[in-house]
Image (cartoon, rainbow, N blue to C red; front, side):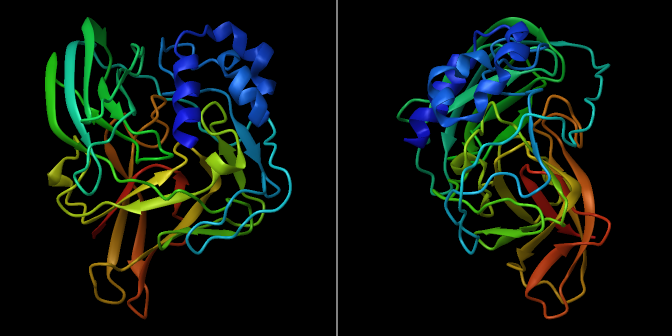
Amino acid sequence: MLLRKNQNRNLRLQNQKSNLRGVLVGLCSSLLAAFTLAAGCSSDPNETGSGGDSTTTSSATGTGGGSGGSGGSGGAGGGGACEPTIQDGCKPAPMNSNAAPITIDKIEATLLDETDAPVAEQLAYACGVDICPPPATSGSDGKVVLSIGNKMLKQPAFKYGDGLLYGKFAAPLTEASTVFMKAYTPKLPATGALLAEGQAATSNGVTITLESGTVIEHDVLLYDTCETQAFRAALIPAGKEPAGLNPALGLEILYAVGPVDTFFCPAAIVTIPNTLGWTAGTAVEFYVHGLSVGQEHAAYGEWAKISDGAVSADGMSISTSAGGGLPVLSAFGVKKK
């Protein structure tokens, strides 16, 4: 059900014009509208055929947002209706790109999950920060081919995964044609944990703690129900890193999370299990993956330091430091400082 709904929504969005956004954006707030009127919610006017790669429409909640939905692994269940309001939240202004466009012709990839099983029926894109050609869908063998036709794109990246069923990633492109033999993405939990101000949401041992009064801004074009806005996390096993990750960064613990491009003001406190057994008090750094073409917190397709942190006194967990945290939900990594 989730897969069909997510695919239908993305495919409907491909051919929409941005001038419909102001008229029909309010219709995105209900589940019924997601099926019948998703085509009325357009993507960023600077993109074409993106099917939900970047959006300017948001849902911000400062009083617990929506409720309802399923409890995640260790997360709180919801109660009541979930109808996000359409209002300005805390998403920063997009960064302008001065990068010179490069030619992109063809991208081939095989999408695999953390068990090396093929990932089928997932949309994949080759997008720049300026335009985004139409996507292609992975087959039953996980293979996907994007024939771009020598288009000029700024800071292009191969983007795959939906941030709902599977982790979402973007691998920078530097050549006209690129083949990704193994583009890994872990499967996310079937149910998630409610994100609400003043509460903590936990999935697969990862806890997002939001201060009282936190503004939560969702991408309602892609995640418009309690079910899709719930927090999900999955550990990325060693050797199954996402395509395009620069090993020189030295990230030792990696997580995929969803729903991606959910912004928090102030930043959320993040706590993860100390899976590698680092010594209590060890100083660490948290890095966030740039999935938004707005490049609000990291360059598109790249990874950038977002917060300091440390291993807890009992050695059981790792948390972001006071004054730091995660301002946006996106794949993140941790390494010793």
